[in-house]
Length: 461
Ligand SMILES: *Cc1c(COP(=O)(O)O)cnc(C)c1O
Image: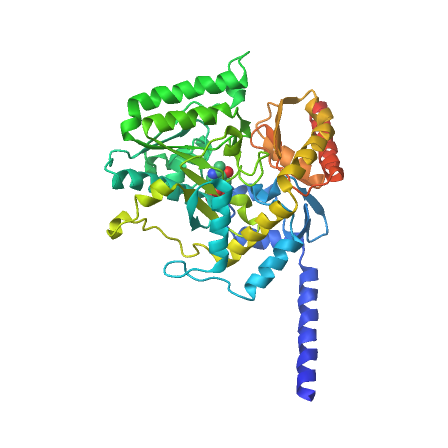
């Protein structure tokens, strides 16, 4: 008894020490340690000499809180992944339960309940099936590209080795995904390593000729796709596309008729259509999946980002029965021999199931429609600001260009937003909001007012 008591007081002492240690952690120390030990993504590390990191202590709802207690409204859903807020109680509960049951088991030769249930539910929601899992978006792109090529090889068309994508497309940073990505900043350095791909014109309506409607621009681009495939279909395996919104291109939005036409064209030329819904899936564009708005079914769908509500890395590729059947054979080489160590991780699948439960129980797609209508009203003054151009909205994405010649616009805006307690990361001159779906009208007002004040400050300079 004495011993137990002494042990527990020792633990309490240790706990006090830990708390004291954490209390003394301040932003300054942490950002210096991080700079020294962590190689941060998508960053020239030297820029941190003048643009300090923001160490985050905790998250709650739409807010991130640093070690000095300063709060930041996460208006970009932590790189487009968070759907229902940080520290969501329902996802937390589901994860706690899963932790007590099974954290992970290899998926080759084994299976488990969360991965089965998630695959069944994703199949019911997408109209595709045979979910193949990885841990991030770029891996999902790789899987879809490899599967498409391998399907044609298995079905006697090994010459179909090429991929096409849209101008300004973004499909991830690994070599295969980068090969179908058309963002010079990410791509040019590695160009000598990339496989050859072709970009067809983008239906992004910002690129329409003066006076041309979004729909007629979409048709014009579909015609260009048709022309390309008329010449090159025999060597083309697939078209990979970001349905409705090319997010990394600066939230380039386009008319759904492009998807309908691209579906028909791909069908006609026997070319797969890969829908990369990594960013736009899970309600971002107003429907659960963006392809629904064109009434089409792709041959492959790539999912990630919001799939776990922003909790854990998980991605999935789903495809048709016909494609799956071409791999199903006595010959092992006709199978899809691709894997990742964490394929189908049980915790990540559980977070995804909890996320799907929230969609179903709260009728999120429907609720977001009224939320978006309220946000549109709140954003009206901003849309009319003299520095704002191309104000646009699709589902739970808002974007506009700011008229500015300052080459450091994105960085300056980011810093000005942080000072006002807003997390916003413009892409070039494009400012966008991609908030978690739990943002309140008051929080949206705060965001709108903050951005107005930054723009007013810009206008004065
Ligand atoms: C983010 C993104 C990817 C890559 O996902 P990662 O998890 O960052 O590898 C691929 N495609 C699109 C459309 C994306 O937005």
